Image (cartoon, rainbow, N blue to C red; front, side):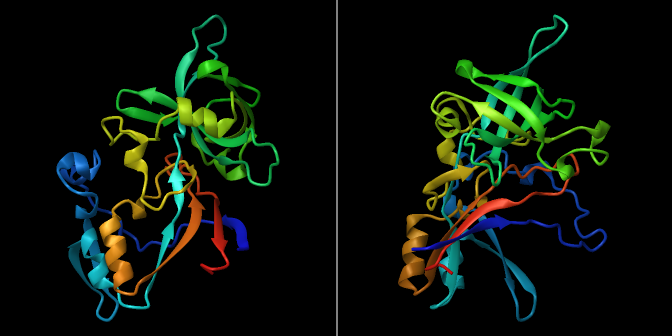
Length: 273
């Protein structure tokens, strides 16, 4: 089948002032996968809204087959999560020891024919996770495990650098990643899933996959599909719901430095379209 190729531009929608001004109690933060809390994948909560009266009610993911009707189309993402977090070392300079940091792969540089050229994010290690490293400079060569390197070429785009960021720094870089076997193979062997401060423990890559993920490429889990199980899919299909796959590879989604999001890679087959 032929496919439509392109990128999706994510733009922030206007918000009603104060609409997102609320406190999230720590007890409601997902510090670990639901399975670690005694739940099944499909046992997580699902908020349902009725378009006829704008009412909302609580359900669970396993209730989804009862909420859709014959002929409805459910679009799912076939992108699989990769081990996008790499241990890295930044040159100390002036005789200082090298600084251990984290390098997050985001996506191949759009439009580049060089498979080594990736959008990357550098992060400093902290006691409760990591934070963006914004004082790197073009030309720096970051060491990776096993003799790999990442050479910073330039800021990925004008929105990932400059006056809008603290100290005029850069969060997202174009880098040349030289690693044995290629970037994806290297990440599979030496990397780990990206996690942020609210996730207390390391979890294997399998915990960051959905049952639809067949094409590796997402730096962060396409999380909307995580609650789906084979039972849910079988019930949906038995009820006459059509399941249509697309591929949407997500880059790093955490925009802590205040910059706007950037485009993601996607592919839609003619059949799904």
